[in-house]
Image 1 (spheres, one colour):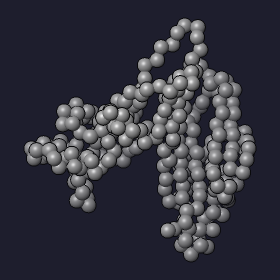
Image 2 (cartoon, one colour; image 1 turned 135 degrees about the horizontal axis):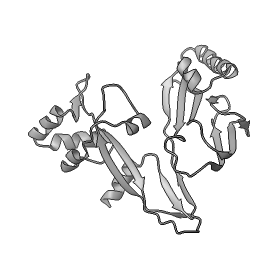
Image 3 (cartoon, rainbow, N blue to C red; image 1 turned 30 degrees about the horizontal axis):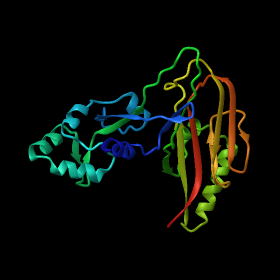
Image 4 (cartoon, rainbow, N blue to C red; image 1 turned 90 degrees about the vertical axis):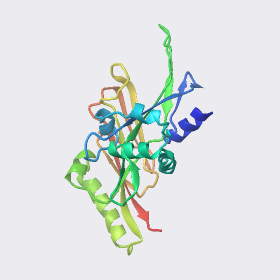
Length: 248
């Protein structure tokens, strides 16, 4: 159906849910917001502090529910001239410094379903998705050192990777990937987490990871585990992956 195709397009993290071992059918809510300021914000910062909402405005024009810039451009080009001009004037679209037409709005996509919890009956709810990594080229300053709890030993391991890249005649470079998972402001559980288990797999034994956690147990060549009972998170999960990427 049309809606299912839209959901698949929007569900780039492959979010799925099960209740008592059976998959549930997801509904989707798409809303559109403008940036609150000209300062660059992404991820949770945008969700917690959005700017003006323009959902009704764009829905009335049948905007594609999509992250596909080609589809959005085709939709924009097909609008009457007065609507295109109005969207520019309202700063919902803009022409960037390269002369390219770009939407200024961003999408908030929420997948949900209706669930009945009967008194006295335990219900097992499970959801999975593929996390989105942030990435940058190699630079670790004081802010990153604190955010990912990079100690002296980890920093030496990172510097060894950097030295390898420097000795490869430009064929390799150091890449930083970071993963964030909110535990403090977006929790949906009541009371402490009875049993918390975090497994981090860096996939390549030569890569370096850093995270803020005590009693991290190495369980394999690339895997690390943190376990807690009656766990009350004091901070969010932030993991830094440092690896070498080969030039094409």
